[in-house]
Image (tube, rainbow, N blue to C red; front, side, top):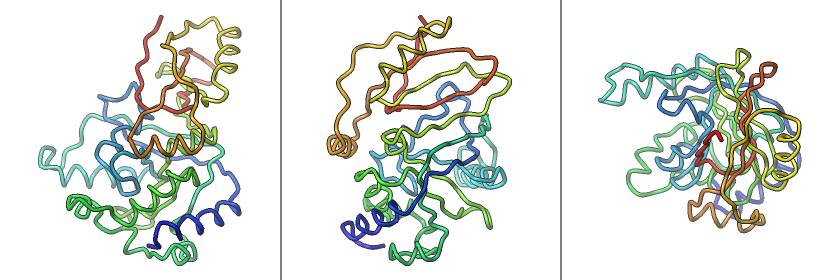
Length: 267
């Protein structure tokens, strides 16, 4: 993997040539966290393949078979599970407006100074030694400079499978949208808005809806781009504003805006 400064230059050039795309992916969530299935706080606490500790990433799979293979791997490697699955919910996510770096492309790998072996290597072993793996370096640099919203990477658990890793802070900064497909409205609908548009969107939502609103304490003004990157280094979780609505038509769980630490209370 290239050094940090060179990575930034290469990523910025690639970003300028990338157009936003829509993606459908799959995610498994422990039933313990089913009320907040789009939270990436757990990855920030434990670290992941494309994020060191203190940085958030939402791990999903482009194929349901890949998602199951990823679940099976952790069920087999966790001695507490011994090959068994925790009670979980399977979600279909629909993301719009993402600028994605496709790490399965050999030309992109060469430009970044990496290869398939390095991208699929054992990052946990490196992290346990107190070091940062090459893939974590790539994710950290990308998040710090607010570049790509997500990366596509070949799965280390499923042949020909691919994972979509969404960098939530970057996607939120660019006002991208991630929704949980829920046509039967089993989930209560939570809406999160980009911080810069939060006040106006929330006001319009309340005026045009008879659904109860959720009250939140006052929050600080949105930081600028540099301040946001600085806060990520210190593992600060941004504030957010949300409204709760039950919509029998769309029946979707939608994420918009910063802040992964969610405390929702119906008024």
